[in-house]
Image 1 (cartoon, rainbow, N blue to C red):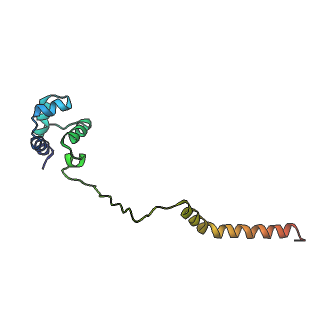
Image 2 (image 1 turned 90 degrees about the vertical axis):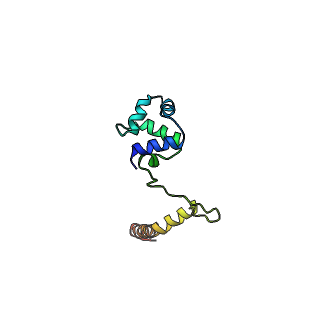
Image 3 (image 1 turned 120 degrees about the vertical axis):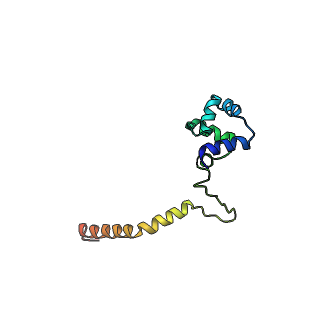
Length: 117
């Protein structure tokens, strides 16, 4: 279905006249008629207002379907939230070899600098 047919279909589905839509958008009835005849397109502001008027997403209004719609599922009984403790444990595990190397290097330098240790 083309945009012009979709605009006309949504208008008729909601029992609006072209004058009703034009009044809602503060434009002329002729502009709405041009859109429905495929001789022009609404600007982005009017697309947003039309999606509100017809209670559809911009995807549904412009292309006729939800292109990237994903349903979010939340499980309240399961928690996948990371805590600050998890962060510090991961940080320690990641940098433990570096820390140990730095400490051993410091001991070697101290032994060379002070022979009576």
